[in-house]
Amino acid sequence: MKLIIGLTALLLVSACTTTAHTRPPAQDATASTCLAGGGAMKQVGKLQRWTCITPYKDAGKACTDSSQCDGECQTNVTTHAGNGPVTGACQVDNSHFGCSATVEKGQLGRAICVD
Image 1 (tube, helix red, strand yellow):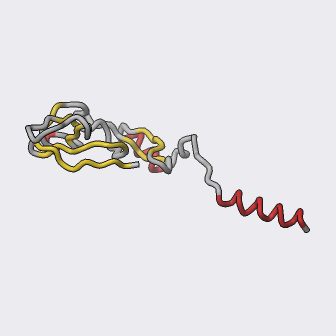
Image 2 (cartoon, helix red, strand yellow):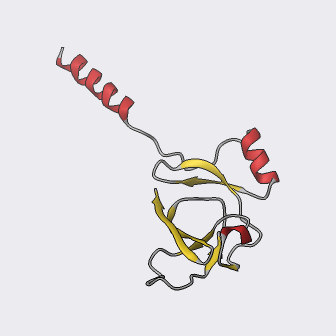
């Protein structure tokens, strides 16, 4: 009886655990479309979900507004102190994970950290 209870408890606990997937997903339609568009399937965020990450052509270009970039004009949250004009850099890729602040019309915009 104790053996059955122990095995049942072990099965219940193992059913609740998650497994990290370290290999990219099979070449399904999403992955194929991602690769064809110049992206790469990468695991992102706390949940390590597979997502298509696509680099922007103007990555790293100096900017003062997101209208000047394929993505957002961003700056490191800790690099600007004061109320003067802000210069940022165009977003590297379409991933929104990590900490950054937008630059809009030469001013520090919203700051956000995404896990």
